[in-house]
Image (cartoon, rainbow, N blue to C red; front, side, top):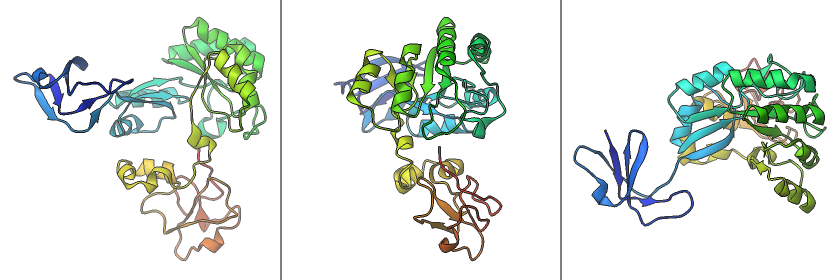
Length: 315
């Protein structure tokens, strides 16, 4: 059955048009125009406001239900930047937003994000590049993610530049774009000669005019993950009722570091690491007890249960 949406302003991705209606058939746009598009038998949607193409979230890591939840925010395409194959398959089967994933990213043994996803295959040097990329293609990867840390915020083992260059070459040979995780301006410039196509983050430190020009001249696209660079200030979407209402329990936990109904109170203290939130979970828990780096009375884990300990830094 065709669907015709009327009574809207139509934004085509570049400009606001004069059209007020869109007809859809077979999952595709059949026509744009006015009320004359409505035909007998069409499902009629009396719209309001502005109709625009689906949004693309250019940097996600998948969780169960993420592709369905994306649709509630108008996001119809997710670019996943590191998830295990089984997680990707589950997301693709959810019937939500389109998922285009790197599958497992290329990182050094013990490198980022081992703390979140290990075990998974590592890359030990340039000789591993061809086989690693071939395995990702077999998993259905749509692009290659490489992780390069030069001693910035993350003090972890890292691929070196020759290994990144070998991976980029293998990716291009397989018809994939190469997306690079970097955290510093210097690291971004280090990788330009390797031929990377995209930087997965804006560097966390300021870029000089020369560095900006170099990235532009190389034709490298940059994903503006500015909320990560800013350390997740405040409560984000949780502070906006019109957005918080669209988040399920998992989304509220991920966004604010606490679970609805799980926190007796939230503590803020100057001694907590930047970007963390403290959740008191035991009867009688007080914010004054959340000063030590490890305590069992208050916790900052995703689950916010009394059994967790230590600080949790989002991202």
